[in-house]
Structure formats: structure tokens, C-alpha cells
Amino acid sequence: MSDRLDLRGRGLRAVPDEVWEARGLRSLALGRNPLGALPEAIGSLTSLTALYLDATGIEALPEAVGGLEALRTLDVAHNRLAALPAGVAALRALEVLYAAASCGCDQQGGRTGRLRAEVAELSGITPGFRGQSRTVRARPLAR
Image (tube, rainbow, N blue to C red; front, top):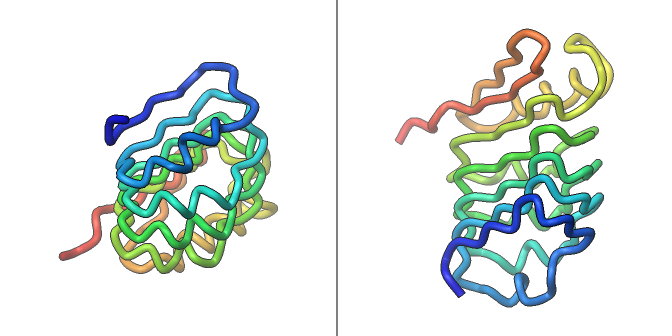
């Protein structure tokens, strides 16, 4: 298996078990699949530097995401996230977090406000919510 796996838009309701066995995987794209949830097995992919979970219908990220220490890009846009796992704050390599339209609430409160506060706590990352898109982007960390 290559170090990149793109399974976007394949109608998957679950991630094939073989994916969790791909220990050298660096980029995993699962976007635009009706997954609804992501298993804790994501934590077995410790080499991941990019994880794309956009438009998968997830409402929460598993705590195991916080153990993906090499992760530089995390895309959870167009989902209904209420919060980020506490471990995301420990991801020192994280440079980009996409969370556009990750919930249906307004920018000032509700789930978007809580998500914004959690992103603000991430070391070296500045949240930005632009217009109606409610985009959270992270700036590269100072090295």
C-alpha cells in the first residue's frame, strides 16, 4: 500500500479494516463518505501527517486523534462537531485545521463558539472565522 490513501466520495459507511493496518500511511482522505463516526483505531496510524474527514457526518472525533503526533493537517470541515478531543491541543506538529461549517450554530455562541474557544487553546494556532463559512484555519507554528 502507498503512503497515501484517497477514499473520498466512495459511499463508505465504515472504513475498511485493512486501513488500520497500514502503519506507514502518511495521508488518509476519507472525505465525502457517510461515515457518521470514526473508530478509535485511527490512533494506530501514527505516521499520519494529513487526515481529511470533511463531510463525513461525524459529530465527534475519537480521543485517539490526539495521539497522532506527526499530524500536520486535519480537515474536519462540513461536519457537526460539538468539540475537539482534548488531545488535539497536544498535537505539536499541527499546522492547519480546517473546520469550515462544522456545525449549524452562529459564530457568537452555541457549538461554534465552544469550538472557536477550543481552537484558540491550541498552542501557536490562531482561529479565524470568516463570514458565513465559519472557517477555522491554523497558521503554521513558529519553528
